[in-house]
Amino acid sequence: MIPFLKWFLRKAALVLAILLGAYALFLVVFASLCFFSKSEVGPLPEDALAPKAEPNVRNRPVEEAYYTYPEWYIVWSYQERAAYLEKGLLPSDFPYFGSIYQYWRGYHRICAITHSRRQFNFGDHLMLTVIGSSFALEYAIRGAYERTIGALSEWASSHQLVDEDAYAAHVAREYADFVYVRPFYEFHFAHALKGLWKEASFWGPHELRKLERKAILSVDYGLEAIYSEI
Image (cartoon, rainbow, N blue to C red; front, side, top):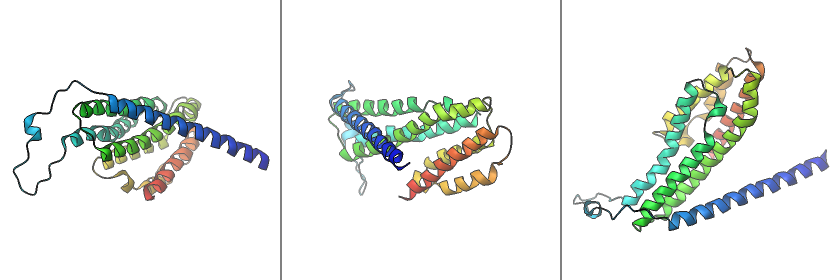
């Protein structure tokens, strides 16, 4: 058993190293494309460059308004997912990977606009890279799971959703509305985990689907609760 465990850990470490290396390469390529991309948008209007007359008013750099677009895309993606699940649609069909692509495509377009005007803000780029990477990791894991084990679970239940699916849709809506006004790490994932076992009945039709949903949602809410406290 121990030799097998060592072999598994070595293979897992190798796969992780390959994935991290591939993602690091992606960030390097993306940064290069972002830096050299330009868009024919013309110069800024004069009123955008004129100083404000009001005293004690901080003039936010114009490029910061553009950089908020990728950030808000994540918020609206959570809204899209919540609306999707509320319709009772199968979780495996949600476009997780398409959402990841849209985030980086939008970010790239913002780079093209701001760089064509020689605008650059390292702090905003760092923030967008960090939250974009976190968003991509979250959706990649969700997408990979739902397209494999989740899809198999749906097939086992004849593509009929269970109480746990309805509860997940409810939590998704609460979370989407919450991050619209508050930071994600203030959301009570621990309460969501407790409610999963309290509100969703343990017995009922499609036991295999119910068990699978309870297991993955417990892991999901539990890890999110721990991550929010870090």
